[in-house]
Image (cartoon, rainbow, N blue to C red; front, side, top):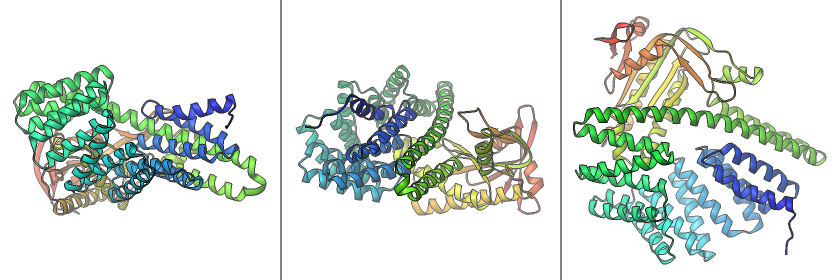
Length: 537
């Protein structure tokens, strides 16, 4: 029998509680894991070290940092494999598959889920195997293989029914409902969603209640049952407001706004949309700040951990530990550069802050998807997020090609600027070329995937002028740009047309000798009078 000290018991409890902070305070969770990892490394306890890396993976996964999640899950798997813990190998493979799924790596997810399933079955852990069957059902749905999806969901539901695992059974019914919907069996979809709703209400899983109500409302709406759809949306909104489920509240408000608009209730629709956009902006700012602070904390904790390892092992592995520190520093620097321009990041590291600057000659790119809210109702959340990821990743590459600085994305909107932090005499020309490349990419993707829902219709607005750019705050900061130039670019986008590049008069004067442009009239702008607009041919 293994005896543990009071200190070790406290460390173990700390590690067990770390994942509880994933949705509320991930920085706190990472700090707890770092403390536990340092303790167990000092005692060469491979089992607990592996547990630490697995918990790191879970925390990074919930934050959307899927590459870091995969690396830590893989580290945990190798340690579990070394000590021969097959059940924990299977568990971490299942976690790895989920991370792959959210990273849109469906074939990789399929591979590791099947490996996890085989291990669980060999170990006789049928109950946990049910969760893998459910995950396989989800992956096959994403791969449009609805027969295999149905097969795996039914296996999961059978096991969870036999073991009376109603929490997982509720999730299985959601998967079966989604499968029925894709097979155009509306009645069956409503039946499964209703059964799932009954179970999550029974167990008071309020977040799941909101999610299922939204899905059920969508089916009712597509089946022209306005009253039932409205009732589901209102109930979802009520629960989300009472319990602070901001993400769920945004989705419900957008959906209800569209429903109201479809039935001519435009005043109520506008009210719901206004509230949804306010919440959406608040969530985005909170997420960006939280991610940056967590990355900073991760770097600091990793550096401290590596320094401690160097002190303990400097006589035997000095060179190797230095390499590891450099690797971690490089990774943190790369993550920082995903948020800040290189020059600003360097200034921040050297001075601890970065000065806001005024830039006279820049061109701002602003785009969003036409009728995005309507489109979002017709696609599953994962399909929608995966498409945005593919499109925005392509936009990023295009912006890099022309040396344009991406500023941020907000929902389906994409903001970038040329001419800062390094001046560029061709800023207007480069942005117009990038916009044309973006349109060409969207057209190619439409031909490749089809455009059943109008997902690839995008509006682009461009304006040139001066802006102020800098970091907001001291500890919780994000790089952004401000000024009338940005607002006018947004006006150009809002008054543009899908598949067109709409530029302001200021930009037109800079590029009229380089591109063929078509004058298309004026718009009224608050405090600015009338603004002329041009389409780039």
